[in-house]
Image (cartoon, rainbow, N blue to C red):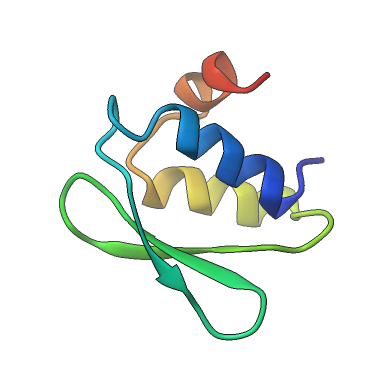
Length: 73
């Protein structure tokens, strides 16, 4: 499973292509980003994200699971 930091690194790599912007550090161990529609979403910086949480974060970024995996090292 991926950590929140690994997910952020993938989003950082594709930020221009998918128009993902880093907004701020959220409460606790979260980072707030925005997707190409301007909708904010957060990524928890946990050591390991549950599968459902990871899929929701990818969906909030307006990416498909396949697009995320293609850009994940």
